Amino acid sequence: MKLALATRNRGKVREMAAILAPLKIEVLSLDNYPDFPEVEEDGMTFLENAVKKALVTARATGEIALADDSGLEVDCLDGRPGVHSARFAGEPKDDCANNEKLLALMVDVPPERRTARFRCAIAVATPGGEVHTAEGTCEGVIIGEARGSGGFGYDSLFYLPGYGKTFAELDPAIKNKISHRGRALAGAPGILAELSCRRG
Image (cartoon, rainbow, N blue to C red; front, side, top):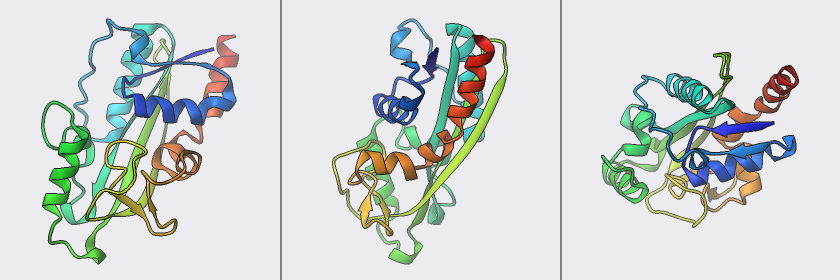
């Protein structure tokens, strides 16, 4: 079975491939389809964006597709950056600029008000238009300076008090188990196994 991931983000591809490894399926990304157009993420929620990306990818590739949309919600910023997490600092996407903007907005925020969460919605779609969805969250706080060299996006600023580390400092295997993406993808093996059986 082949599974087309609706992303070119290599960090996401690595994480998803590791989480889905037990299924022993061939995981592809949009890099395998160089002519695939960029899908505009114009939904109001992570779930709307994930469903749209999964459906477009499944129909264009002819394969079962898995899409995620995820981002950071900071309580003192009224849930921002939210669905705009990837382009928080504007175009083009730039993780460093996004982190700098976040830190600048929170420079005077006391520790007790720096609560935040990562949220992820996933959608699995077939070329025929069948869609299955799941969501996951991970709670943490935003620290005042970057720590760690792993991960991507806001990982170096997202601190988990229970582990005493940021996402960027965590062992990838641990991160994949507790992260928003790991939790959202927890239901994917069952969904994909069922779809694979039906296709086979």
